[in-house]
Image 1 (cartoon, helix red, strand yellow):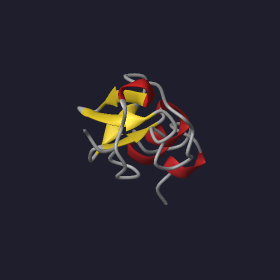
Image 2 (tube, one colour):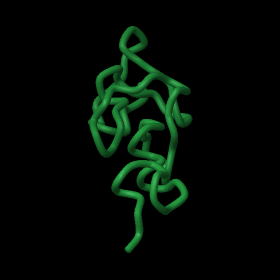
Image 3 (spheres, helix red, strand yellow):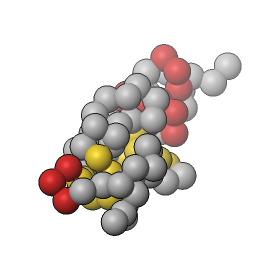
Length: 76
């Protein structure tokens, strides 16, 4: 039985979502930054961790500068 990468508990067939090559519980597949629940294949990945496309992934790993990815992306 596969284990969820977030909580390390067993993932049963009825409750699994497959993403990033692993099986997750439906409520464990969340953005690493804002904890928004994500859908399989509808999110970004960085270092094996899921992120929502907007605003978290683009703010943290997108292009820097004003007007790109929210206030957190500007580098002073």
